[in-house]
Length: 82
Image (cartoon, rainbow, N blue to C red):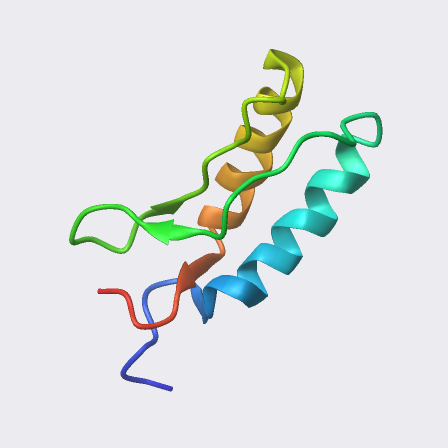
């Protein structure tokens, strides 16, 4: 576990992080039923990660998703990432 530890972040598998993101997103965006997003994925060679929202998401829902992702990026990273 120490090998995976990074300053202030907890490593999670993409599917586990997805569950946390989904729960947080649905609490804030209850009316966004058609909105979906991908499993978290690494960006570049760093420890950054993101998700992609579906085409069905409105701008308002995308904004909520961006906020949820930003909140979780501060706490979690993908396990196995740099």
